[in-house]
Image (cartoon, rainbow, N blue to C red; front, side, top):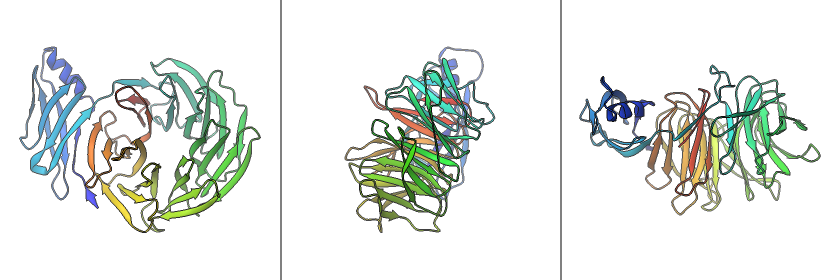
Length: 383
């Protein structure tokens, strides 16, 4: 397993840089911390001037790329240079109590509306420039998952009340409620244009539903423990289980066709599937990201960790010959990595300090995909 060192930086560092460039009076400093395998952690400060970044400890190197990007590295600690990026847009979800924060969110493709939910049983729809559009009220438990249908006008949501609801994002009406799970809903996926949806829950089941008839078409009893996350592709339905396994279901044959990992290993908290490269990717509670070849469940292709915090979310950024993923953790890390051997971190996204990353979404753009993320501080940020 590859253990990666990394550098953390104060989330509001761009304020100090901007103030220094504008020659605002006073000292403009922000903290940085380096964490390397088998080495004591290193904590120091960076002073921003009008034209440079000066680090108090020479073991860390810093340089400014732009007003919201900088380079950080530590050659002496074998931490290679990485780009650290601040958000280009922030949507304040002011209707969500700050104490609970955003537990689930989604953004329309390519990005015009946001739906977000917290611990009060309600969801809110916002325009991405921040205007509140409508509140979706009806759940009686914490919101755990939400996703837009492809039209961008309909929302699917799940909560700890064991219910799945379909909403109008225009007027907030709830024409359909799907009931059948006996545990809290943990994750949701939409199949194709949205005639069918998939749900996972703490009852260990994955269910396929037909929206038009509000009926459950199939139930997969995947685990005696919770199913924490799912990923749907037309060729595979992949489930991350609390019992330490990743279970792959063939949607066409409606059978379990492969199992990765073993019962009793650290819980799998997140999952992704790269259909082009046939890679199954699981994120564990002990901070390890595991990658398997779909055709070889018994032999892990590669694994890495970047700290010990649980891997809460994994998303595919690209499915090229060198696939890239975006990883979010329970201690606020958010970064993209190339699944090469060795694994290479491409970019760090800085906004959430140590708040757990609750969700990541990817939307296309002309230059590179936009990374959207939320944590438990009532904001959704775009990078």
